[in-house]
Image 1 (cartoon, rainbow, N blue to C red):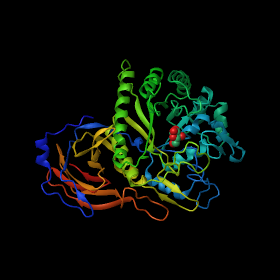
Image 2: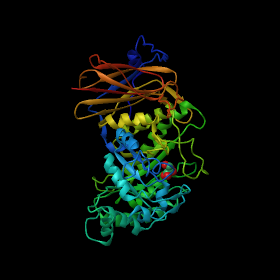
Image 3: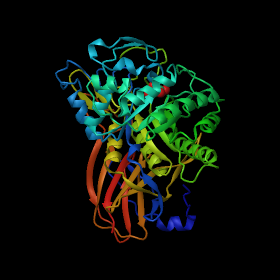
Image 4: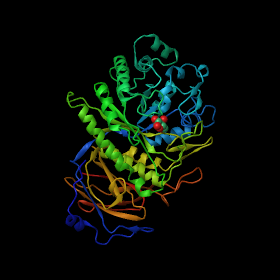
Length: 521
Ligand code: AHR
């Protein structure tokens, strides 16, 4: 979305004359100015941008959500403490079974009596897969937590038949050998799963069954036809870009894939993991500018693909893997305790910025899944006897619980810093959601490491209606982490702030994410 820059004179007229010095930090002398007009709508925020992901990987499922025999688990084997943390996170859509794992998964291995299921060599992550958590367990779990299930079919080593029969097993109501099998396994009525992925990261040479864009496009097209003919109501997700290595034509991948699949898919999947391996805080915080650029480029590719399509044909972006991931990323790492990234405050700020970016592109990003949910690059971290909530849990929880309705196109004028890779980056990263019930949510990340940032919000065409609640995610230091012993980074509720006429003034502490919640009339 275009942000309209104000002239220097207009802006300095608005800068606060005497900025308030907050305890423990300096304050930027130049106030940010943010104009809000509830009539300027980017798009409806799809609740499904607040999703997560479960993969058969490390301790995500076994030892995470599912721990048979543990005194903390229920009769089905689901950890009750994890369930509570997942419910509190308000996960809207849950993707499963992978990830790379899905590219060699035969769903038939994961049905029937648990004790009779085959143990298989798992080649994506180098373990033995017990198959004790399969289709029934996943769909029981999503129903317990009230999330939409999203199943990623195996388009790596799998066949068209396997993908088609999975849809039949899960969604078909008629009497066939496949649905009789489902009934024999204890499920009479179909679950009716809407969202199905046509493979995972098929652009990556690390993927089992990796293909060229043309080969993937042709193969996925046949799978899509059979899956749709089994249940025309399903929504299909094409495997888009995940490989942005230098020299890789990631845009070309999406263009080619859509040329085959545009009539059959509703979403194009994109993945992005970011990190701070060089310990450069400001470059790291700028990563989400790169995310926004990728969204814009892909939106153009989608528009191009649909140039001749009927007007009502839409394809959206499903950003179905995203997160910070760089520490626990040793390719030779194999086995059960892997990808157990421990997060700090600077990671949580990047997460809040990812979510701002999805909200600010609400018209085109309609699904997003933080990868993953438990233990593996995850907001929830368990041991055999308990769990703690990582820093990244808190911004996601605030967004998922509150940031709904229409995304508003804000005019943001904020002081900036210069990123070597991405140019000027505003210290304040902002998004807004306006709900039909009159609730206005303002999401503000202050990227400044040392200074508070003042901001003046100016409201157009409506009126503030009472004080704004203030929720802040922050901690003592950008490197502060949570652990089983202490929670240094979390959401705290601050003193409400009162609007003055059509303006709302607020000071955002250094390295913080703040959500302001109030009402308009
Ligand atoms: O989420 C971890 C892995 O990252 C997934 O299996 C894969 O899709 C991606 O490369």
